[in-house]
Image (cartoon, rainbow over all chains, first blue to last red; front, side, top):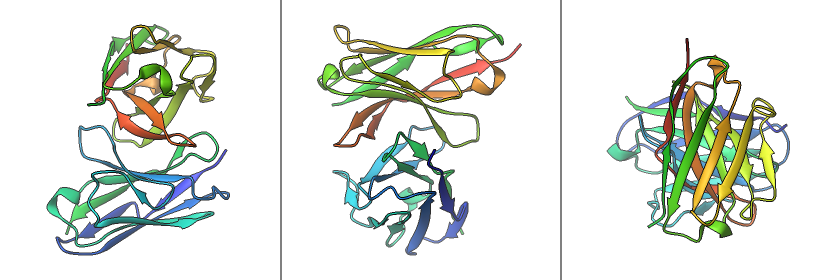
Length: 106
Length: 119
């Protein structure tokens, strides 16, 4: 089974900051990676697919990159609405999620 | 508007059974594979089970294989998860998820239904 590892687990940042979250796969998944945002008590929201393609309606300050085993989610100019937990997910072979990265207010 | 509404969650004793339902609307239900994903309290996301659009192929996580059964009724636009022999570690919010794309990512999620397994 493919394992997904995110870092850091928690990230403290301020409005306006640029933040980067890393996701590593235990084996190559090509570019079959998605990112989700989840707020407390809510369902996850789909942000990015195929490592770097933005889902319709997602603000352009979100971007994704990477291939193979290493991927990043970048949020440029962090907004108050962006404080949440972010999950990566591989869909190359079944589904597996990272453990999540909580972006909190500094 | 794509919408999925889960129901059927609740409190059940260890060893008991529960059947979750997910009513879908706003898209051609039979054209999409569907999945169940769960989230234990304070924990991350865990894929549970998936079913093809026609219902002829089903897939399960090892943690639920032999205990859970996924099914669908395309005439009623409804997805089901029959959960038997429930354990405390099955306690979680269960999300109904639509799959999309050439390799199937999760593009729409229901609001979730809480299953609590406790005596």
